[in-house]
Amino acid sequence: MPKPATDKDLNGADLDRIDTRTVYHERERTMTLRTTNGGWWQAVVWLVCGCSPFVGPFPALGQNLVPNPSFEENTACPVTIGFQGFSKPLHWGKWNESPEYFHACAGSLGGVDTLITVPLNGMGFQYALHGDAYVGMYAYGALAGGVSYREYVGCQLIEPLVVGESYDLSFFANVAFDGTYWSPTQACNNMGMLFTMEPNIWTGLNGPPFALRNYAHLHSSAIISDTANWTLVSGSFVADSAYQYLVIGNFFGNALTDTMDLASDDYVDAYYFVDGV
Image 1 (tube, rainbow, N blue to C red):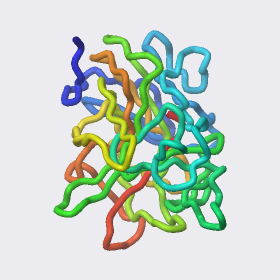
Image 2: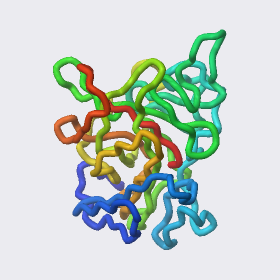
Image 3: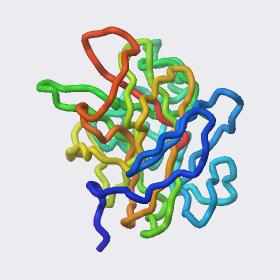
Image 4: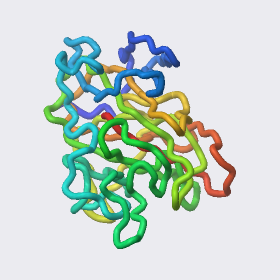
């Protein structure tokens, strides 16, 4: 039986693509960052078998293994914060705590702000990368006693990864700021992707715990601080297990996460919108 590599070294992750903004190379994992200004392609992100070249702008060359990658399809238009069973993106679920589903259809309900519309919502202002929807989650925060607080979204892949094959990984992130109700004060690094063998989907307000790994198959070593533009996070890795599930968020504890101030406040937290997975 293949076993999860939640604590495994990722030697062999590589990145050959050159980015015009910044390229980060690490021994265990690699990633690139680029914002969407400058007229660059508006991409769907692809999880692609290594037998194909990088296919972000060329979808005919590979298959995206992530269902509903831009969160456009849903069970119903969302009407309140949190992933609700009756209004969430199809194929996606909350993996830990209470991430949000934002959609332009949300608007107001009986004259009351739902806080989850697009582009202006309770967390910040951002148009969808394409279409009308995206998800959001706390990537940095602390509970009583200094316990790290994280929110995750996850899905089952269209088909399991193949052991030994190389896969391109990427998604777009945007740090939330100056929302109509909340105003996160920080930007942070470590937003990333983690693959697992087992699901951890919460169907109610509570669910099984999902412990911090201090590890990810892809993560941004740089702080993503652009509040205006979507930032691409991308890299590649060789599958060491037949992973079936993908989770998105910050999988590192507060002590291993770098932050920067967006505003001064006694409450320190970072919240990110995610699209194009």
